[in-house]
Image (tube, rainbow, N blue to C red):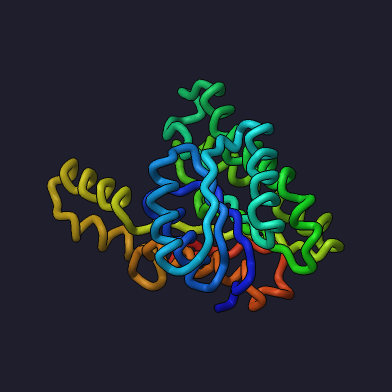
Length: 259
């Protein structure tokens, strides 16, 4: 129970990583504030968190809306009276188009969520976080801004900007006892990656296992980690185990990229 008595705020409740982060935080004793645009996903995750014996507040939230972020912080204070941990997991995955062929307005949409939205939510929660002696901000980032590939420009650039500001926040917020770190997953094995691998197998006339093994061979550990293992890294940064760690980018990708 590394997080017993803590209140953790989590943005982005997708069916894979967001859900697993919520469950991992709850298993370690944290009560949860869940924020996402889709209320159905919020309710599903809330039921699972409550089944673990934790309290949970669900608030449909668009992090690109400053007023919505401020309202989320206000509801968190009203319900729990505090916030110890903020996990910025909400994201937009970009356009998958080369820079030359891109409409830069689409890049702006990606930045509005991954960079500006994350900063809006973080800024809205700073008054609550500064009231704690040992608050944590965890940015869920990506290997894509470290291992650069074509057609991921909007996503990689937005996350690259987020990686830089993570260090700025670590420097500026450290005197308030706030630790700020980034988790950088690579491929997260789950339904979306399975679909991609099956699609590649069909296009190339090979088996799913052929494509999986080929991609996994690029990693040191020869496998694609599931969301549960990425969530463990989030818990580490949120916990007392990382008390002396701030301003860091942790690759969690089975050795797919080593800085």
